[in-house]
Length: 309
Image 1: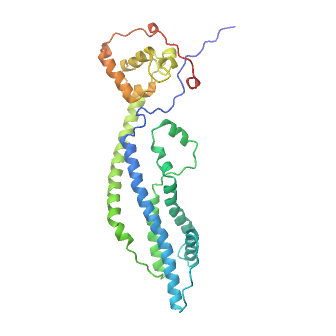
Image 2 (image 1 turned 135 degrees about the vertical axis):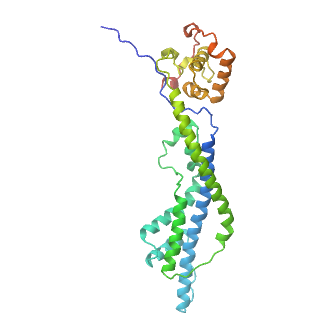
């Protein structure tokens, strides 16, 4: 019976690491601000759409009662949800809206509550925290930001205005739009500036990712098996590198890897990788005396479950 050779250890299964340790890069920061400004406008236009539906239907009812010389019936106390439902029923019944348009408007008005009640979920996908990213995979029905909601809300408001005019509905004037006009202009200006900035940062991010991916490979190097950068004995349980882990880190810099690439390969923070790079340069950088990896004594570290994943 021939003895089967054991394959070299290739490291733990690659897992998302956050070299910035929770500090958001500029791209994610800009996207959060962009979404926040959009959500303010979504909340405003959703509330305005709801008010317009209620006011238009109420004004039309009052006009009909006045023409027919009928007293306005006393309004019964009903929940706000029922008032909105009855108002939409009247608009569909009068042919102002189609059932599909009604569903679209109801869904858009509901965006206001979705944002208010699930604000934590709307921006969670922009987090760089590994635990948050893993947890989101178990939340397939979470509330996500809808970048088209604002445009759809404005389109529905214009549609409602055009249809009520075509159906000779009584017009309702409101000062709310004038009160909010200056604020909306300022918010839209900021959104446009952020949009341009985000597009530029996305292009830069793609270029950086392509460059980083070229650095990530350690194939055809000596850093395999027991000397793999993610070998459990390269670091203590608290994350600090062992003497062998330090030398493996230096070997990566010898290969010309950047601090960001080393941080990803060895699952370090970017600040730690940069500190090791400074130490490597202090020792002479590429001209330093390179010890044999086999000569560096191992440190006994009890195996943990997470090291075997």
